Image 1 (cartoon, rainbow, N blue to C red):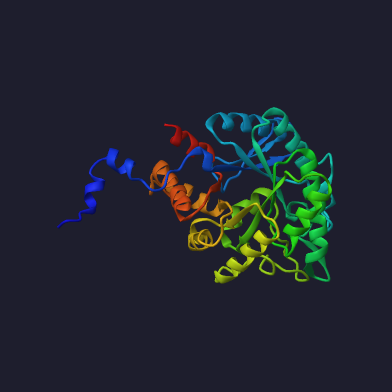
Image 2: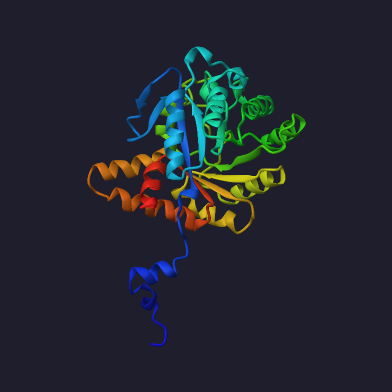
Length: 328
């Protein structure tokens, strides 16, 4: 034989030399759950190693992870029940938990990129990403609320807004709102292809943001999140958001949707973010705890597979442990 592929697999040095995909700490974004109070830390049982933390501990964690090379965080708030309603008005409270968290992080570590989640579900008494009218999620009034929410995040110092709601037209509305209010440098990371997935369960328990069981309103998010049977629809969603001014495109979940990532990578030049969601994380950790998988090996392999499919950045709850492994 003239051609023998095994020649380039002979040892680690040659394998490293011809390696096509390299995972680094620069690829990692850490999602964080923030709660009210001081010096408070609550474990999330379905997500080993992940916690809800008060603002002071959140800032401390951001500092520690920045030293590991994690330069971006994605923020979610655990909102008190007494602040929830059907308008989401707490979401744009200038002194709300999200706004105070953004300011505190930027004051403590200005170099960290802060990406707050823009969606109403943590603030909704119904657990939906939008405002309910006549038993349905009303797209346009929700978009108006999201714009107010996004502008309040920008005023607090956010670097990139991350709308995860999947309402139609919210990217162009948010871009227009930012421009009109003097925030032309604030970016938009659009959850363009976010699927109605069963892999979100642990996340919703972490924020107490699952849709309520009410016969008069939708029991799930399938009227606005994407049908997991579809891929051409994802192309349509992504191209529309790019046209509306999205700076970065998100595809969510991660590993079960790598075919979507690969397809979109061939169509756009904008950066692609992929979210290794709570269910993916929980499955890996459960298998590790049962002794079925090697934690370090499967973690790096799973994250590398996401990057190999075409991701430029990966949102993962395992960012700190992945960073420690990569730094070795």
